[in-house]
Image (cartoon, rainbow, N blue to C red; front, side):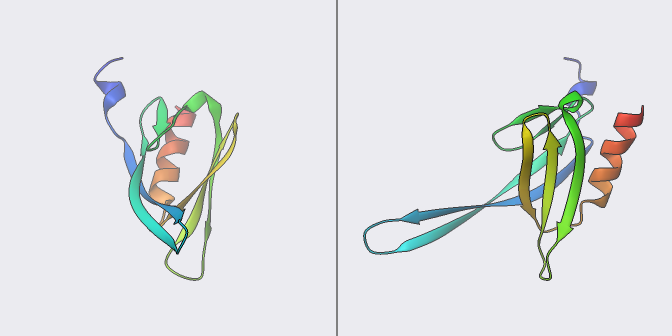
Length: 99
């Protein structure tokens, strides 16, 4: 893998919410992670998707400040809750796919 392959082209932050239930209460733990676009892959906190396995990206905004970002792959659709607009990330992905 060359140095060029390791350069992040674009990054998008997402929220992960983990619900923990014990005998007395339920608590929610939020953590923030990044979806990173490279020349040959997209990575998340726990997965790597090579671009030849990514068919499309889509986004559905909520009425609040967040929205759902969808990563359509050969393994299914993966959903991420994001705060920022993904337009630049999605355009960068399309530019790579065309070239």
